[in-house]
Image 1 (cartoon, rainbow, N blue to C red):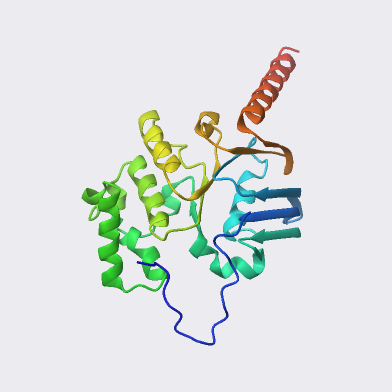
Image 2 (image 1 turned 30 degrees about the vertical axis):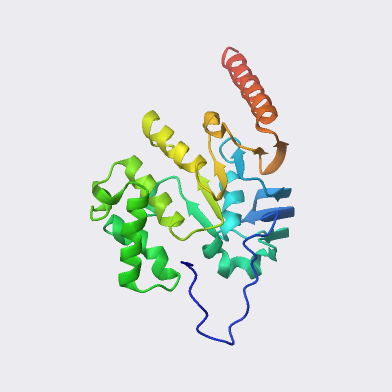
Length: 259
């Protein structure tokens, strides 16, 4: 059964996004300036792989970059194409194609119970309330979470909350799932379970993380530094260079501290 509602207005403009477009995102000399401060500068990337990681120190522009993929940020210079369409033209359709999971589930979950949270996305796509609730329960059961359906979100563990947030976007069948530090507050066991869940998904994944072990099995890494692209390529090469860079920085700090 297709999730997307049929058009109710025959005069409505045809969709501009092609969810099957390859690459799904093209950054052409993209820059972002906020309040007179440069956040991103001269970013050129063509993204099409199934599993893409984004790394960099705090303040490097990682979150701003991935938020462009669902229209939460728009370039102030350069050109960005999403699913084959200019980003500003594509923006109204992006919720259908891009699911976004924030670092803190308390910033994402807005409904009292798990079932209501899962059903919300379906109602946004045009389904009736009763059908949305029924499909939400079925979706939770599909993922082994039927026992959570009626539970208040405030009573869930942090790992359960994060899983619910992931399921709340997956139920809308997005083409792309973007995760911004999704496992920061979770213990090792829950982190492993959620990471395994993420890697098993059919969606394309773009994920930000400071934990480099989370990128095992990824196809590509993008390394940002001070808002610019420092390296881009195979994870093994990027991770080796990134770890060496961190060690050099730590050595420099130790040396400075000893003066």
